Length: 205
Image (cartoon, rainbow, N blue to C red; front, side, top):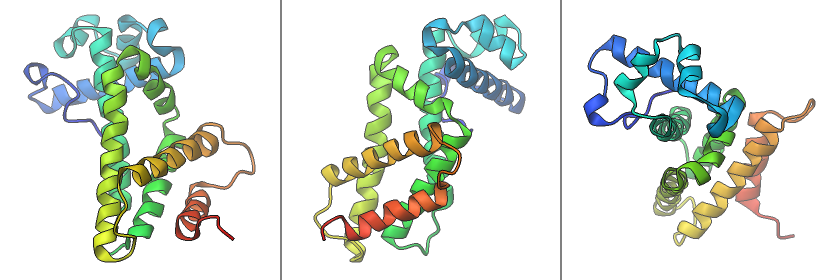
């Protein structure tokens, strides 16, 4: 995953490429460990074993299990943002942007299933990170909807309520079609297409 700029405290941020690679190993190992066992069952020693680094190396970057968990939530939030941004082209219209962003999210969630467990656990382990994750995503959607209104592709009165409604739809589509995916289910492209049609036309007969 793309590493969040806020993954570590400034005073512990790596200054070298080798340090950045080690930090990346620790965050990836933490994602696997927290994803497999949850926050309370995971341990620093198990994270360092997965990362293939010495236990002392952990404390070069983090002071505690809580700190790496907070960094991981920020890292995952940044990775979701990056996946959506990479899928969007400058020439896309507003509704096409929403389709592409959802497709990218579904693909990301399917490739990183641990993201749901970790973000959900953040509600209890670090409520501030949990709230920040969703508020940040919601703000990005508000901005996209308002740009769509300015361009004339969407209504001009769309705001936070519509943005959080859209985010809720995307989160649960990810849960059903990425995390709980069954054989024969439609893939990310088709799910995003149908959801986009729902946005375009609604459900009124």
